Image (cartoon, rainbow, N blue to C red; front, top):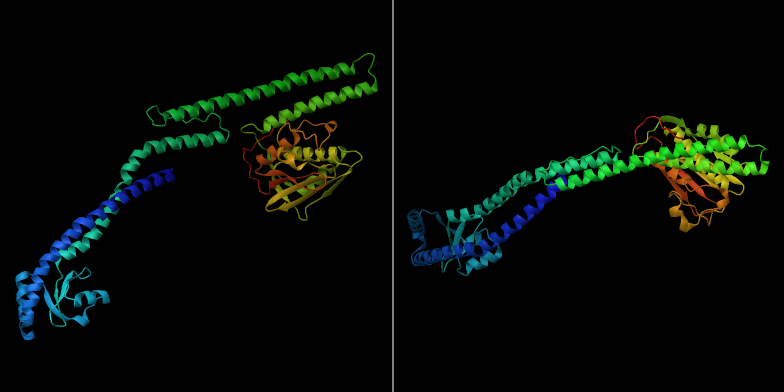
Length: 437
């Protein structure tokens, strides 16, 4: 808000200053010049007569006449050599030609005495002093008036400023997941219409997210119950189904249950305020402990693990990290030809968990969409390998919750995904117990 006030104030002050300088320039060009010309005319008449009178008398009488005229005019008059005048060459040449020279620095008039190399100096003249000081006075008044503009501008902007601050605070709370945040601006506020629109949007957003959560919970309850009944009836089927038919039904039921599970996980990860159970893990040891579980997902395929060269500690939700790596490794095992490699290292202050397979890879034109939910790249992945297109979207959501990211390395043989997580946890949500189905 300070920036808004500063920009508005500087704009008003710049416009005022430009107008004042324009008016001052016009004044200086007209009134001041006319005043100087009038004064020069009066002095010119006096100096012409006086210098001519001095030229007609011997130089020995000059001091007396200078003193007499100075006393009658109430001004200081003196005589000096032309060559000793502290003037620029152009001014000396102008003076030597018999012209009257006004020197603003010491507020004096100067004119050469005809037929001599002497100069009559009058001053300092109070009027010239006043004109010289007037420039600084005008400049000081402009600065004072410019500063005084800040007070009325502040008074005018303060109500708007406070309203914008309340809107900003409510927007930040809403962004942090506090769905009950409202601006609640008073009706007399100039931003009341904007505040009411914001509050209405926040209410609709809260209702929408609450409805989605209710729908998700309903799906979890309503779909899991029929699955349990189907499994029970298959087990009690008389006569029993043929092993092949039973295996196919079990596979379809498992796929259906996996679909429900993935949708629930993705939905809960993208809630405004999912809780995280923060702990400290040494990633090399953690990966070694889970290697056997990952290997079980890919019978007949080789899974290699390359740990970090030094202990690599990370703070975050271990259960979510396990889910993310399960998705990456499981995805790689489904699509590889023979081998999957897992490498852990520290990269620019982040823990980098890289999973690489030797499969067909991902087409370059499809790489930008691969982390979107429900996206399946049929050109590079065979539909028979299973999956519903939520695995990588879940990995990205988990990475973002911990202040990290996931990226597809390329181009190269096979597909290579790197999960990047800050070594020191920079989570975007509150800590607590995370509930995953």
